[in-house]
Length: 621
Image 1 (cartoon, one colour):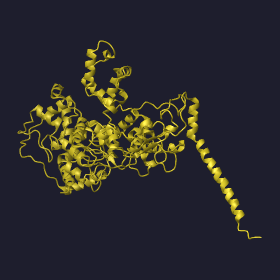
Image 2 (cartoon, rainbow, N blue to C red; image 1 turned 30 degrees about the horizontal axis):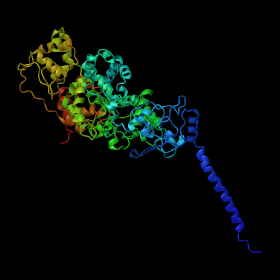
Image 3 (cartoon, one colour; image 1 turned 180 degrees about the horizontal axis):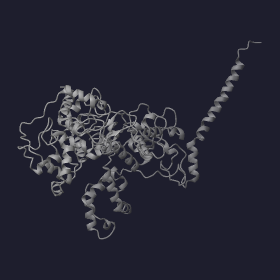
Image 4 (cartoon, rainbow, N blue to C red; image 1 turned 120 degrees about the vertical axis):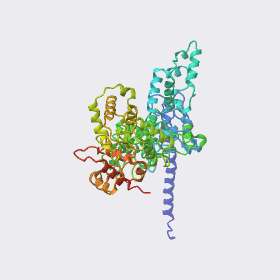
């Protein structure tokens, strides 16, 4: 008998492997036959009047790097006849683009090459762009339309109201005119109103006869509103809210904004599980979600949280061939057009409101060391001239959270700085006219009390002058007996000096103050008066005693601004420093050192002069 070479055993193994191979070859087509997409198409054919071939539906856009098979299940979006009552077979809502041209994943996210619902929706490991959840679909528009422009909130609200009242949509729907819901996406004639007026004037009957001409400012408001109609109303509402809340004050988006927080330009692609939920939690409680975060808790409502989450999800701009880029994107990237309005009030909302408050009222957030001053407060604006405001906006406060908006990359343009200065100036109360003042009754005793409180701390109890302010009742002072000059000085101030405005006084108070100034006893001549130079060494003692607890021992800023900041010292004149010390800052912790109080003494003009000299001594050449 020959030796056993194991042939029998090898034959058995080979036979077993052959059976396994045949089984696998049989399973492969079976698995393909029982795939999810195939069963969905069979279900469709069982309901459809016109059945479709059972096959993979694919959109291929190589220029966008898109291979999209979503239409294999979402059949109506892929061109099949819709079937009501089945979510997979209903027609796609009307949008400016055809899903059969671009596919679904460009807008909705997800994994286009996949053929199962779980994988296609992006709920798989290592896929960082899952499908946008329900309620956030319009965030997908931001993938391409990164330059959609929002308008002035007031103009948009007025325009929307006029469109409703004028029944514009009814006429456009009936006459098959341009779709107003996407007017801002495709553009419209600048002279649309004049064209409507001409048509209405020539019409004898028909829809044109219903048109009622608008005033010029009304037509302008309607135009502003139509520019925001891009087929994604919720996204535009979200973007408007983000700009109004001042997100760009701390974050960059598309190269524009601050550097205090992370760049948000691609926030919608952040690699975080349940990104919408994480964003919502972060908006509600930043420090709890990201320990150590310097983002304040803005006390957002649930609806605002949802809107801002939607906007963040829309920030996921992808690379697009220039020939395919939408006009808003081209205008923003190539022409540098802003996607927000550039009037002063809107710019304040975009860049300043998050820190300084919606109307510049100042803010201090729990858990954060920074205090943001009240720059819209009348007492501040009465002392800060336009030059100070402009320098502060342009150069910022190095070492603090105030950026140099006028010089930084992605900051404010010169004309925008000017618009912001004009807006801040508009927050000052309007002074009563000279006619109103002269017609008001005089209360001489009341005027004397106003003089004692507001004027005497600098000019002396009898207007005799001091180390920091000239005599008022001087023989050679032309304003002593000139009501109009006194009125102008009190309501406008004197630039470059400590004399700020007092325009918050009403007409009777102003007339009474003018009368009190005219009643002052003459005290000699004004000629030759000059402010007395302060002594910095004496000022250091006063500072340590009365100022250091808020401004810091080294003027570095603590609960109050840093006075040793070089940009601040370059912008602030001695007159501004003097007036701020004497008059204080309303709506802040800065006291009124022109009068004594329980927590601080009254500083004499000489002490104020010394204190200013000490602060100024910290300026570097």
